Image 1 (cartoon, rainbow, N blue to C red):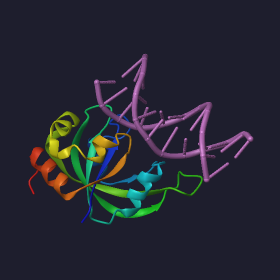
Image 2 (cartoon, protein in one colour):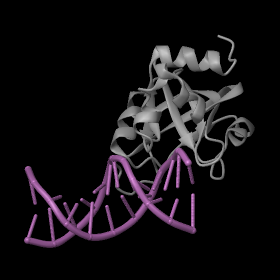
Image 3 (cartoon, rainbow, N blue to C red):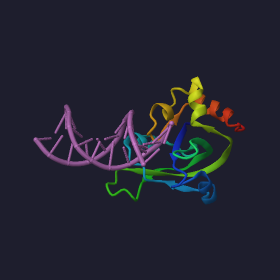
Length: 137
DNA sequence: GCCAACGTTGGC
DNA sequence: GCCAACGTTGGC
């Protein structure tokens, strides 16, 4: 199973809102690298939910509920969306500061390519961040 | 609110 | 197909 990280500004769509909604379509991605990642997602893959601009931390874990399908909001028909559902909150949100302070996470896409909104997370990174966040395995 | 990074667009 | 201009993202 692959792991991923998606970002959202809490002011536009927060973790709390995802929990309240139970499921949502992750649309509006207009970046080819991010799109490639969306397309690679498989049902059941786990995803870190990161709050950008405010909070700056990984606050929750969600999963792919439906694999990539066309984003109806995209007039060009080139982009896709997936459906995601919340799995569990991260008890101790893992901040960007903490991630940057951890040498083992220095190569994370989140750090290396800050603007990418959908990025892959390696197995090692996933486990370490879960530990840092107090997530039970 | 500013600014740096970087991806996309469009003219040539 | 290259490259400059532009727009957007996101950390600070």
